[in-house]
Length: 361
Picture 1 (tube, rainbow, N blue to C red):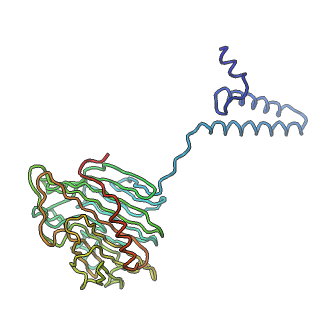
Picture 2 (cartoon, one colour):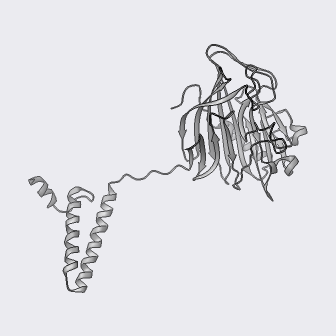
Picture 3 (cartoon, rainbow, N blue to C red):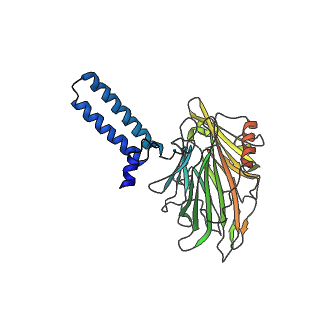
């Protein structure tokens, strides 16, 4: 008791200490009591001013011991109900990843351009039933040990298993997920995928898809020869060449379907009107570390493009081995000059590639 009494009567210590708070609270009670009982109004005002001063010191003293708040990351990967992840910049959604297990495959929709409109769509604008597998931006393949994962059907489904990591940052945010490519009774392929959203100036950004495919330990997996897989992009209807007067260009300077179709390239750009008089687009980029780079691109004037992984021949993954792939989607305003797209591509090539062979923590 003696030590406690001495501490309370020792004067004003550092603001926020218990003895100081006790003294300030006692002074506040005295001043308020005196103000209520004092008959001299000028003196009453003075006492109230002194009480306000004590309250201010008390509040700031209490805040002084709180930790300084950390900066809020500009880029965030925000998990949502119903098996979705929202990728946001400054709280505004740029893309959303859907991974419900009752789907045929996970996919990304929307892909928001600088104007605030989605540059992709779900399904073919003229054939919505037979092309309902065109899920905006998706990963799939038409022949995995002969099983079709490309179209919607009973044969093969890519089933989400778990989210391994969510990471926010000032320049980028990402999610790492783990999938199983399976039939009704057998897993043919395991996949670890990182979905990254990276900000750029002028409200532009890049979506990066890193894919690590692993065969089961007891048998190999063959990705058969086909033009369909492993990545597809279904553009908004107004951006298509046929429906909206858009334009397809590749890194070699070729233009539109007849010249670009299944030709090897570093990248293919699809640009067009997303609003009247507002040009925007997406450049699909094939990373040089991919085994078949430069990849042939399957494109159509009706508004779709994809990088063909095994158009030039099948690829076998031995038991327990891995196949790493990386693709980027440059979401841009206008119809950039080829040199500008190439400059962005050169930067894309330099960005670090994650090692997805092991679980991420």
